[in-house]
Amino acid sequence: MSSHGSSAPRFRRPAPLYDSVAATIPGEPDPATSSDLAHDSARALLDGVFHSSDPEVVERVVTLAEEDGLADLAALWSNAPAATLPGALWRLYVLHTWSQRNADDLLRRYRAGSRTVPGLRYLSGLAEPPDVDEVHRTMDAILRGAFTGDLALALRRAGAVATIVAHGTAHLADEDADDDRTRQAERLLSTGEALTTAGRHAEAGQLD
Image (cartoon, rainbow, N blue to C red; front, side, top):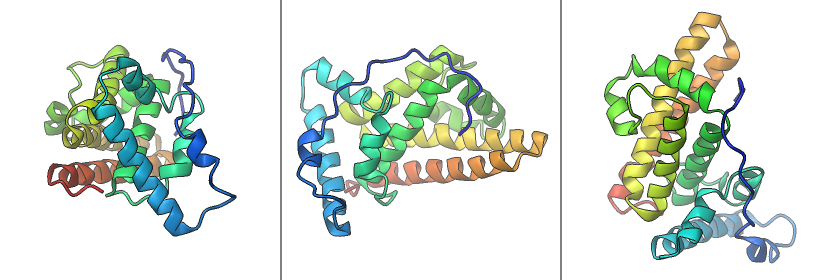
């Protein structure tokens, strides 16, 4: 996704959580090993943070993907199906990272899309009218809530944000006759639908 500037603060990249795990993998693991590792690491991370009373542990996980951290998560989770725990957490981290680095761009798209699907604004949790600081706070709260509160609700809120932004991106693409934005809108809509579906699975206790 393209950036039109960012007012997001720069964060120090935390140490990767999975050095010891990665060191045990010689070269490219087979698909079965990759799938097991993706699911086991996602569940271990979620359970470990949920049962931790240490605020530094929570903060480390929330900022895990800052700077170059998405590459670490991509190696573990990016190939996981959308309706699985690692697939859902991957999409949640990608959306969060984009919002932190390009909040002004996301905000422009969100404002354009909120007129099309106004009902989703309440689920997203973004105050009206939102600003860049509100985007940062809300997306942090959604990611934090996935690990410390209600995973299903966090995924549904993230799905609502992605869906609204997808509609806004489509509107902007129509205005500018921009094929790249049209493709972005399609990907964002797919992400929103995937997160919403994952939220329903989580609510039913079926997100593995």
